[in-house]
Length: 279
Ligand code: NAD
Image (cartoon, rainbow, N blue to C red; front, side, top):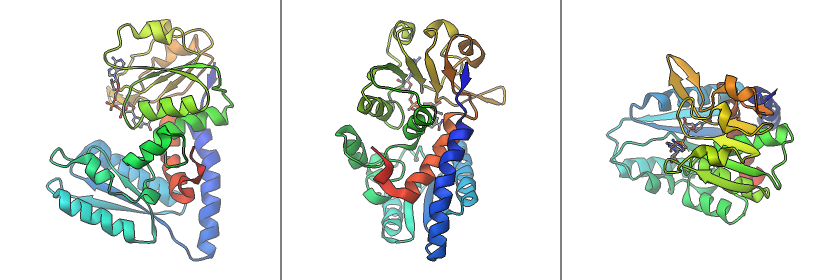
């Protein structure tokens, strides 16, 4: 079984990001990633901090705009308007979820199309859907970066995706389709996941349920990508029973150290290179 090591993939992309930032430094250009953190959501606060740390480690300025949970929609829109107009801000990354009194999509759609580094606006989604260049959500991009790094072909393969969220499952399906895979999306209402996963050359789990994907669900020789992040007894685990699945799969991503390790680097890459890399 081959371990698909996200840290190696991230290191490869880090190198390219650092080179661009170093070149800009010589021209006294200091781009900024604006991280929007609203309310008290703990995982969001942790992700914002770790995102900032990784950004700083490649020499990219990253500012956390920390606002209280009772901020009004109008105040939040005004903040985005300000960030949209600041030339030094190359990317705007809102932490999700936003508080329930906020119309999330209205806020996201206010982000300037050129700064939508996590591909969250309706216009970015439409571009992906219609096959035009644009920003792609960073987690699906991370999965594609793993396929590319390990030269795993998608054309003609049957990819089964577990999960249909707007940020992971659906964009992933489109990206795999763009690479000529045959794609099946399973979700919470799919009866007998195993019927589908057993046929898959590639299984991508993006649900958020520890131990969902077991050895008996995987065709021998399949590739298994684990996007899930769950906390179990103080440990971070994915959706895949790693030890069991490793016995039958040809290649598996670990959690931690798999997709998540690449995702943060994709945010930085999008910030630095804009949408030009995405398709
Ligand atoms: P979500 O809650 O928005 O979506 C979960 C999806 O799983 C839904 O589409 C639902 O229909 C489906 N689902 C629920 N129960 C199911 C079941 N029993 N069988 C099949 N499908 C089922 O979550 P999300 O934002 O898409 O995230 C999914 C997972 O990926 C979470 O664990 C999240 O923490 C993780 N995640 C990881 C990264 C990363 O960088 N590694 C980034 C984003 C999300």
